[in-house]
Length: 277
Image 1: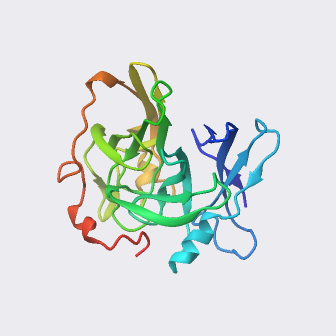
Image 2 (image 1 turned 120 degrees about the horizontal axis):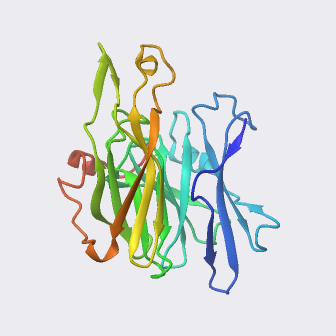
């Protein structure tokens, strides 16, 4: 197996007692104890934290495989590309978009990262299995900006489509408001009969917040190699990429409701809230 972390995963927060604590979620793949399935389909996230500037690290007592098992989910656990947010009530949230549901999901910690609880979905923030970015505003503590792929996946756990790219904001780390779409492409194109390959997609965004502006950069499809489109190809997920850079004037951002415009599939809001069902 191997272990990885993703862009902007490292976070530092000030705890109520004044300690500066570093956090980083690390993704582990099999083989590890009790798991023998393919590492391609299984990502288990453990949150590590340090109180001495990164010299020593402690692992959380709870991993995402534990949380998935508690739900009774019988499929393959896959939970990766997570980001941490310190909420206004002194709890932590571990957010994730790369998972086998169809939504932005989160787990919570009430002891500053030692243990994690629950596996919840935010039904109006639908997404394909993809990466995302979140950053706290250094000039307005407690305000977070998130860039995520706001698409309903073609099927549960599908990585496509990745064509709608949205910016959201939260003032407490828990409740998110829709701000705007950063990119929006045609959903898909068929290069071979019966084989649908997403021609345009957004991958691996990074949000950087300045005093007056927000910069969002990401990979954006430049072109699709014909070899990657052929039936049976295993290389069709990522295209050749170019760098996309978007600058947003913070003073011009206006929150909008989550409605039929900002939500991809209103019918999913009627589900019972269990992320894996």
